[in-house]
Length: 492
Image 1: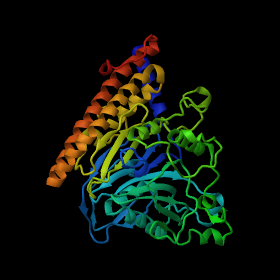
Image 2: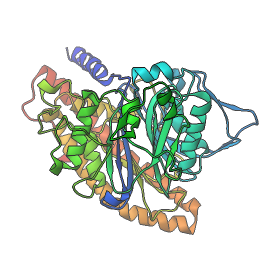
Image 3: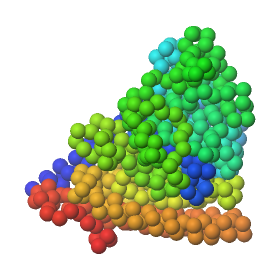
Image 4: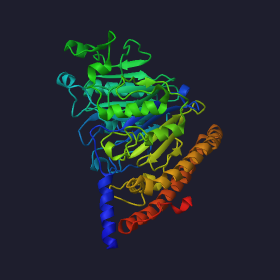
């Protein structure tokens, strides 16, 4: 009987862990002037489905032959390979081309360029008829790889993607952010051959659902805007251009009407960071807004877990089962790129990374110059493997979310205290890192590797311990209802 129950439980876990959406992910931006510690925060949750494993790896620098091509083995997209590609860290799909592609998603390279790509989007049917997406064009699966492997500034990354779209077209509408020590850029790919990017202002926040979001842009301001040549003339030629307050609007021209799937996250996110505004669900939202107070790292982490608790759209209530929450169960990794002004240009900040979904999880900090990641994080397995970090964190969350009050509450409380300590102690690690870097960058690499191993593996060890105990507790609770809520031994 016990064996049968365990088998049923495993089946249930796998069912709950697999989900898919053509449009997934939620992005967040916090400018340095409105962040609590003066850092720029570029953040995103990758919401593709729990049975979609991720790995955290370092790609070494490499030399390539003249004429060599970068190729997407799924679509056939090709682009000339750089003669020399840079070292970079990233978070690819564990199954890569055995599934749908690389999807490196987020990372830093050795030149100090960071990227989060992408938040999927869509375009109007009328635009599709005149400038359709190209099946063999640029897609999310390749963007992070191409930018980090060859770009030495954020602006160079934007220009590279624009050049590719000009020549090969885009396979998808996407939203992404690229940054370096100097500046951060926000880019929207709005149709088969049109795109626009702006230099991000430093005194605002943004919560970015799956939609094109820019309104008016001055395409003549080449210092702060990069756009395709026909961004305005193409829709104008076909009588599709739309204006807001007498000015060309990217969103009105290219994007469909805002749907509940996206509206709920903007409503939830903007009210989370700026509750005094008391924005109604039907508000006409802008991309950028001012938060009520300076935004901390922990605030963003809590935002990425947010299920609108305590509101009319509380995602934990049965009647709101269909509401698109920010803290959705199908997150496969959640990240925060923290760019710090006092860090060197080539190592401009920290990557805070949670493997699996955020709600019952912890974000581990990594220095961007590390030359290797812990084996448990680098491992790639398409099926459940309790020696791979992704699967353990994902498994723990899946069990916890079967009953948030009974199974998950103590886990969330444990990780919250754990997270507070990690954040508090990071200042000391940063200081030590900077001293070592200025003495000898090679020593800083060793330190980055040591911290990755120490912090990553301790979090993995704790997650594995809680997963094992909770698995047994849930199995027994199915057969014989437990009276007391689950509390992991490491929290007692």
